[in-house]
Every structure is written in structure tokens, then in C-alpha cells.
Amino acid sequence: MPEASFYILPSRSLSERYLFACKLIEKAYRSGQFCYVYTDSDRQSEQLDNQLWTFRENSFIPHQIYEDNIPEYEQTILIGTKAAPEKWRKLIFNLSSKYPDDLTQTERVLEILDNDEKLKLAGRHRYRQYKQDGFEMTSHNMSIQP
Image (cartoon, rainbow, N blue to C red; front, top):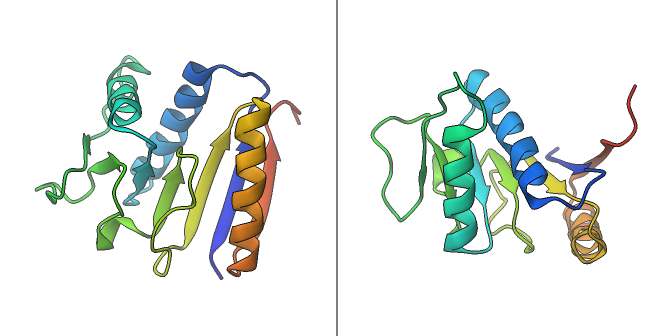
């Protein structure tokens, strides 16, 4: 059964949301997983692309903005507004405000929300849609420290 995990951050900071996404993307890359990062716009894709280069001093995560070209190095993280290519559909990071396209091959979707009410409301709609589509749901409130 596919899984959708929601991470709710305590701040309303877009840069903190991207930083958190970068850390999760790095974790996925280090575990050998292909992943695709959905964004709402080319500008958002570029912002995340830039942050992946700079978020940690000694970190290297091969990534590129997806423009219908499959990268030569297969474990490249792809970022974009288009539907994910086949090999990149298993793990989806959804930073967009929309429900991702074509989740038939998806094993896990990660949604990262900050504490903005408008963003959380859109996230609640996607939560219901994932649940309706048979995803196992998990939520992580990141303001609660274990």
C-alpha cells in the first residue's frame, strides 16, 4: 500500500521549509532512492535547485530541473512542475499546492507544510485525496520534540 507522509513545520518560513526538504532529499539520495520534487513554478524549482547546492557545506546531491530530459546519472534528483518520469515516480516530494499527477507507481509521497493557514488548508484537501486513493497516511508535527 502506498504511503503519504505529512511533515508540519512550526514556522511560516519558506526558507526553513526548503531547508527541511533538502535534508529529507539528502537522506533519500544517500539511501539510494530516486526521487522527484514537484513544485508549483519554474521559480520555485530554481529556488530549491539553488538551496540544494548551498544548504550544507560538504553535501553533494546530484540534481537538476526536469525539462523532459532524462539525466545521464540515474540517481539525479529531479525537480519540476511536470509529471515525474517513470523511474522517479516511486518517491515523490510534493512542495507544490496541487495533488501530484500519475501516482500509479508511487510508493511514498512526502508533503512538507509550514505553519501558514492557506498552505495547511490546501494540504488538508490533498490529505483527504490521498486517503481516498488508498494511501496509508502518517503525519509528523515537527514542533513536538521527542
